Image (cartoon, rainbow, N blue to C red; front, side):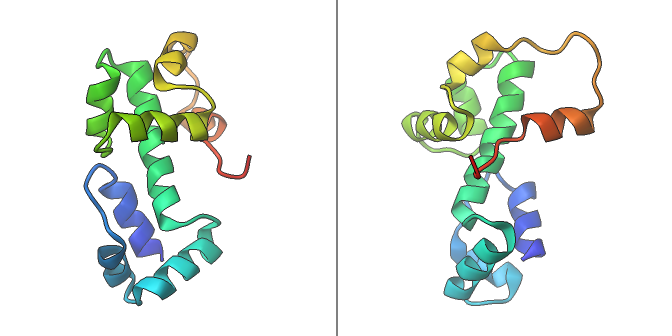
Length: 123
């Protein structure tokens, strides 16, 4: 399971399917989905979506790229799906997220920032 999760973390911007991830974990597709959810608390698809949204959050705050470019850069194939998923995970649309948050002026340790801003699937 860790190998598959690491593959998702490395290649979040590429199209990944359950069959390929199950092969990485050396299990069947059905067993992979059940075991991944039991181990990490969310389905592989949801984990991959959350990982892509985390990267999009960073790009929205630290680059001047438009939302459409960021959508495709993080691996979504549809702007509508990206916006809907972003809103479900973060609680606001990407453009509103960018507008309401300015990059931090004072340096904060990266581990603190990452832990504080990481979206959660648990509410």
